[in-house]
Image (cartoon, rainbow, N blue to C red; front, side):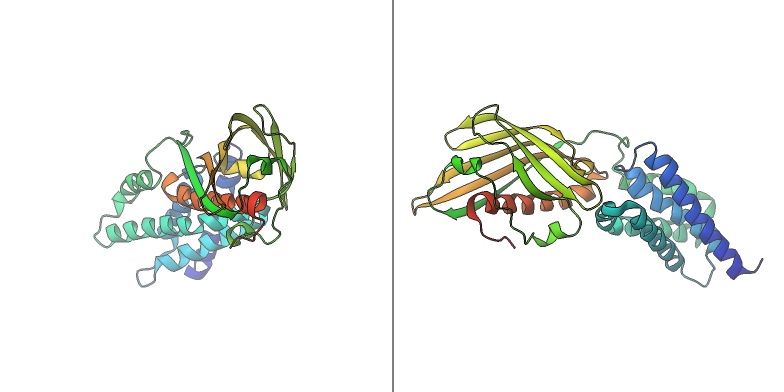
Length: 294
């Protein structure tokens, strides 16, 4: 078989196998939030491409990255709003593929090709954090502070927030956006139900309930979450604390406790911490400041 035709067949077969692996194993078995998807799948694509298409005088990186890009574009069509997850994960996909290709080429150049499948295993375990695929992640807490004008009180939390139409940049790339809040009251047991609109999944609701209250602090616990955000983050607790300042202003501290549901944690948690931080500043502005955030 001529090499160009053989290469085309290998590309088609690789895309087909990757798609089947993604659809019938990762999605059906609900591993779509684990390192099996974000590390295992790009490794599979890389192994197949390097094994069956590379030439001594050509760069295997080119063919691997090209096929990986095709797979990600096809996945975007199927994922809809989940495309945001693919966008966030794309650098990790390419990093895994590059690492796998690099190791295989290093061994191949030293006539140790028979070790390829063995040496890749510890590399993948390291990138996947060496943990079981469904291990429950530890909780993370993110706190942000803003100084707002006036001596404000927690009564502000009784009002409907003025959700700023101009969302911060990072929240414009596919995250569900808050559109309304149901419920009032700032006493223990009072509830809030925040509606999040998803362009492909419709409206989901985050149900919160006040579990602690002092004169200057409210703590909400999470009752349930049917929003699309629950695919990435498990909210656990949200607290709002006010501190009057001597100059007639008020310091607002918004703290969010959550669990990252994506693995590997070393890659996704910093992204989620940034997103939660931006979201918290946005909510402070919506409730207390009514000034647009950047």
